[in-house]
Length: 425
Ligand code: HOZ
Image 1 (cartoon, rainbow, N blue to C red):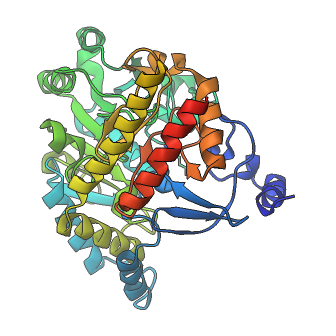
Image 2: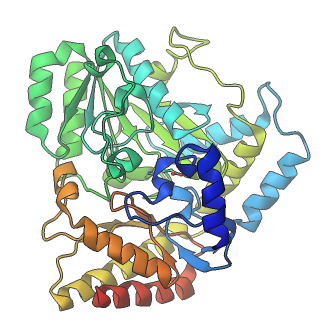
């Protein structure tokens, strides 16, 4: 018995499914998860001392790799001043200034503790501001485990084949209009039917909880125009893409300005943080200024702020995005070229340091396309790569992340393994 399998047996006795977040359980790819005892740079060390090149990067936050010494020092400095004050603290102000500087649409920002809290607050604020109830979301987009948004959701929900969660009242679900991604005519139709009732549209502008999907040309602009026309709030969920696709996220990359943006992951530098930012006029509807209530005992926590500030500053001070793009392109091109040579149907969407491997003939443009990709082949690929020391996300619906710590050595090694494994499928 390995150390990981022993831990998993014990975990399953006390923790539902043995994990504290469902996709970690390997249900989609089969087998049992490994346990990690430490992580450094681009490498995870399992409880059984296997070293893995990590492309999960703690599901996005670790853009500077694991246990980055500069972030660690920032946390350590903060630690000696106290772990939580329950009053405003100077870090929060610096964090707000950094976010407003980096993310184009953000005039004001409220710190929360997770991406889920950010999207939950975003839709409450959109509803409070517009005094309307309906929200449009897109099939396959995942916005954390918010009741109104756990409908046709991606990520772990989809991985388990249960994109609609039990426990969500029908009365609430009926206020969520679910539409297919990349079909503007369906959104126009929804606005034509319910325009005066639609509080907002929420979307991942590059859906990354269903693999990695790009919007077709004009799609995001079309959504922006409809929201402006009908007085609805456009919400970008950039929990995954914020500070990752570029310093200002997808909104900067494509030049479309949402009204509100949900942020998380990188902003916490590896500690639990989320944020909601956007137009001052809307943000001022939040308590204590406005009628929309939101609060949190640990919001703006000094340790999390210190880690996040340090992570964001590192992005600004280094040439991170150019080197991340180079590494992402190298891997994606190598996999796509090898597949082409083999005559194997594979798509490798990539932007900067995000990519995914779909076993599919056609470009994946929406949830149905993603579901139709070859699951069995993906799972075989996942396990063989893992055996050889490369950890990809354990579901065909999750995106891969590269960190600045991967550097050329780990990327070259992983590229060899990823292409060689493709040849052996
Ligand atoms: N929501 C994350 C994947 N998109 C999973 C987080 C986790 O399991 O840690």
